[in-house]
Image (tube, rainbow, N blue to C red; front, side, top):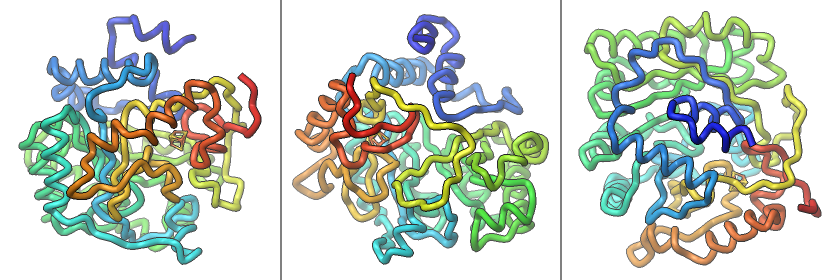
Length: 353
Ligand code: SF4
């Protein structure tokens, strides 16, 4: 298989891209800004483990990556987002993660092998008033890669300066469009001109502070509504970004009633999802789920509490059983994974190996 062949190549950045390109395409605009924090031996070892967990199903002492939902609140109602559908159904709880809970997560992770965090799941993280302190804490505790997705609507001068100085390594602005008409149809509740100014402000703040970090990525989820803007997306946003990413739309929770796909879905009969060997998601409500695609928390591995730490959830029976089913090509037996089109196509019930 092409990916396995590439794993032996010396150029590790290329291999990373190969894994990412299963579902996303990245375009690097300003490479000089991206490379420094990736050069350390610890980072290279982490990326090697990332590939070995995905391809060889190596089991590490602790998840390499945690998605931490510092809030489940969001000011927008994007039609392709599972949160929007669940809010409409009256099936969503807005919660803020407290600082002491976040610190407990980082303390345990730093001790046991955590390498990277993403400060989101289904919410706008800039609404957590402790966000800068959280990033700063994780950075001081040695988490190598600290990333955050944002819709950019709440960015201002003070927030931009705080984030640039916080230890954040990557920020991903979810923009999806280059025009007012399409942007405001997709990012419902946001105003195009304001968000463009906020992204620009962030870029200029980083330049003014002469900081290489965080790496700035501007992303597009490709779907029917915006696909005609793909060819000009990078020239429009490239002025304010180090990387541009294009990710294919996925009906993450199965709740989106509109067909937004721009590519034909491919079924994959030997699907074993890397997420089960690489990461866990800590929801603002405290439940720990297997991955960041499961807004309905259907594959809940446990609940974080004084008695139940992350390591015991990582080593727990639910995750062991889920991995075994994926390895036996029976992922469709897990409700959350059945029909999930993350990374390698749709899984259908009754598939034979
Ligand atoms: S729901 Fe999808 S992304 Fe999550 S573990 Fe299952 S297959 Fe992987």
